[in-house]
Image (tube, rainbow over all chains, first blue to last red; front, side, top):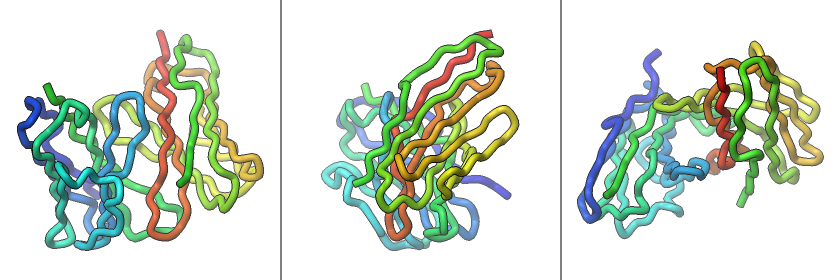
Length: 115
Length: 112
């Protein structure tokens, strides 16, 4: 079974530029999550989708971050314009449904450096 | 809001040493606790999902215990190897539309 795919793996941009990350979850997984992990911190949820609807985006900085999952499969996370403090690993995860125990399956992450 | 704490933040051990670290979480309305291992440049990998007070789970040289009444879990690694070097994350889960809430992790370095 193919895992969660993310791209690009690494991205370096200058502040005020824009960047987009892509995620393809495990086939059949209805729920998709984007987490932000800043160095020295634990992963923090940015947005959670159930199929193509947003369940929770309370911690997404909506003035600069946007995410979509138009067909309920792939998802894109965009940052525009980027700030220095956006340097982080952006992890995509998926789960079959809400699930009994909440287990998530993660991609390898997209590491963003903002100069 | 769940608050999950992990200690220590980082740990350096010699190859062959045994080690352990702690995850603490709110004991009220507990449902499940997850441990993940996250090696550099790889995806976080689920180690254990623990739900019952007194639970003890084992995978090879790694084991974990759970105390839901006092709100803590220990992760043990016996005879550490360089390949155990990783960040170990714990996360608390409550059912409903809430996702996993992670601690900051413990970064383990095993020196050969």
